[in-house]
Length: 290
Image (cartoon, rainbow, N blue to C red; front, side, top):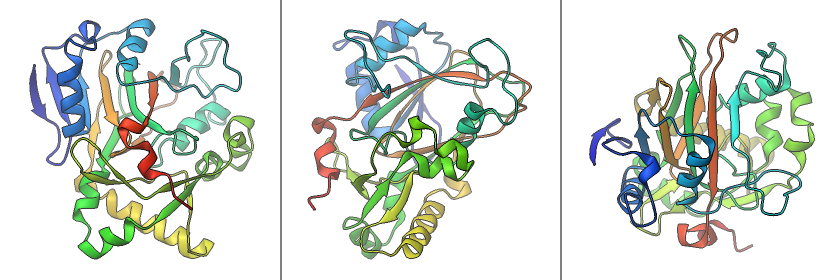
């Protein structure tokens, strides 16, 4: 297994691995070590089918299921990140699902709006446009390390409120009213997530964050905006130009990401699988005590 750095702060490209061969005792232990250390892993030329992507993601923990009703013994579906609808047609510019994809062009961490947030996203490219459509990433671990000791101490006391509809409302008010964006009550999470394996700390924030404990709405909004801006400076970004078969695995505790535009008359289809965090991943440590 050979690795090559993607950014000075985080991320490695891993060569010499077929993810189909990963099992709890083969390849995965080393992959997990790199995951904890580098936060983002890129594997090229994988071309996993749905079952193979599902099996690999399950090595990290239980798959996330955002459906309203879960059928017994039915695995969660892979989430398509695509501008192609169910009939195979390209979506028009005001299609609600395309607006949803545009909401993902805000800096975010997946699933902070859920009662159990995500540990990892396993994202694979199937079809990519001729230009555009990169995914950008930054390390909120490196961003935390850049803060002064006083700012770090303050962040450790902060609690942020998250809700799905908040990020969608920034793009389209009607989009935010859809049931799937309003079905979960707001969640409160501590602003710093400590990795229990290596004790590193990361800012836990997302475009879904809308309020801060102890601050009035305007003050909290300004605080969140300024913090997000400080974490996502241009020099801190790794922008990934997708190729079919690319698989990127990243630590939701320590990485922020966003999509970028592309010509919407061209298909862009990626498959996403999120894995839910557990106590062994530090989940209980970010639950506020009051």
